[in-house]
Image 1 (cartoon, helix red, strand yellow):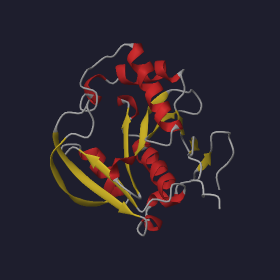
Image 2 (spheres, helix red, strand yellow):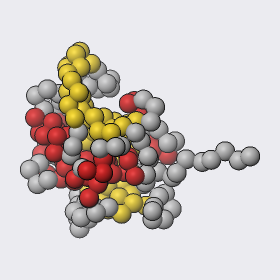
Image 3 (cartoon, rainbow, N blue to C red):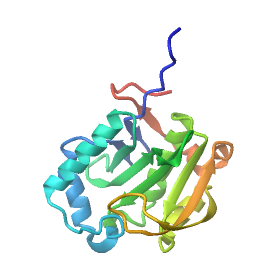
Image 4 (tube, rainbow, N blue to C red):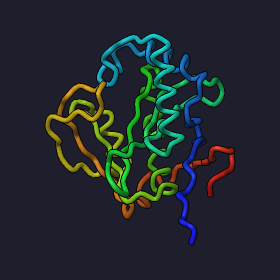
Length: 207
């Protein structure tokens, strides 16, 4: 008897205003531009400040390798017309069995245009409709009111404040706000209504 295989992950997503896709080698320079132009805006995530191109190359390689091995998935978000990188969105497996954690960052000059909500909605829809998760988590620092607002806007429930946590080596230790969304709640959220096209590694559209 053959073992059922997991559904292929979505490598490329199209939303009304964005291309959200697995990173490629040429994205290292686009990523450097996005972070360098943001000043202190992303200091909470990347406290090391301006990084050399080689650091972005290593990041792209690491994310791509993890993506291809069906581990954590990091997507770049791009303007369809220009190819300019606006940020990154993530589906992380550290949330436990049958669950994922969603995360994102956005360059400074893209803030305030609804891109964070659109990116996160694409991740939410992908997690529930293609990955078939039971639960999706979103974590943010207590002072990060914009990310908390995105979570609430998309129907996540605030579960509590986690004390003294460090989820990644390059993150500072701090308290975290924990929001969750369940598969039973997803159909009633704005993310479920997002127009979205998804494609696998070979460019085949996912139903």
